[in-house]
Length: 535
Image (cartoon, one colour):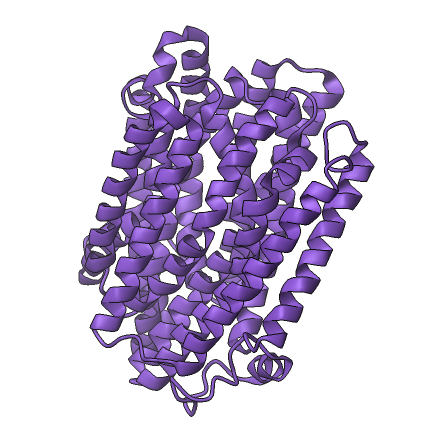
């Protein structure tokens, strides 16, 4: 299967999850708006979600995958199964102890670490503690699921792990639909959503569990022991977890800061949901596929193929994310108005969330590039360097967020996030080049400026089009009219961008066709050839 087809498999499944996520957030905005229950639920959900990104997805997608792949090559499927059982025993035990400890300490954690600003509102504080207590076991489910997803990715079975997250959104949509039909109050909706998150974690774990069994690996429980393989995993996993979860670290810190202002937490969450669509579909797909592919090429000693994989991945991410970033920057407010402005989500909320989303648009390329650069370190079992850069990024984020929040509120926090993201991306790229792990690719260097020009011209056209369609895009227009106008703008923007991208030489149809036929495992392609295989 070609590299782009693998990206499409993961990206398509992620797209399905993000679409259902939009529907979920639309229902939630109508039911809760940016009020106190919305703040309480979003803050409580961020706690297990942050731990999941830090200790599950970040650690296992970057440390577990290369080691599991090595076991397959060295000792076959039986050796890989024994290694996975050793890891499962340790992981399950740690998660059990962590869950018990966090449940007991939840009031302290919310008051001192997550949302100190809620302490002045007893009702909001109590709701946040209760919601977080209900949802925290979701972490254990998703951590075990992340381990099995890493196994599936190493076996080149991407779909089950990518499609599992959609069930969180399906279940929460069902909860919100029931709340709307039964006329529940906001607090009752918060409780039901919290229980829905826990059920969704169990469902997602079951999906990847059965997928691993169907792949021929049956995991049994072993008494937890720190074997040599497990110790090696832990050495790699700790910095990898910090690095892979840098966005979540920043979000957790920002939640702490934003809790001082009513509605700020929810405003950031709604904007984040929209910008996560291109980030998830492109960035996560590239990171998920690139790490095992790059690890395989480096184990085989094929440096040319490794360089080609990295260059084509960057080209692919920029080809799709530059126009998305430009669109978010120019027409963020109409997007937010169409998706969320109804029920308890007011026009004032639309303006605030739209401003945050526009700022996120400026940072989108950076966050996607980070996901393309980090596998270049992890595949070489270097998790320390990205961890150091992640620490620098966190320091930049915290400093700017604290400085900007008093004057810019939630927009200041978003600005801090994107500046920190660009700092991280530049440091990662510069280090890869300095170490000689990133070969000079003339076609890549010539196409990127052309793609930037195409995206800039598209953004300028959108700017005037949004002004021209101000009435059909406004709150006064019927929902159907707003939807038609926005979809028309998106379609026109796509035509303009792709016409310019192909016309200026940033991409070509023959290049894409050849890349779709190209096998990612081909060892014959140079790292800096004519670039005909780029997406």
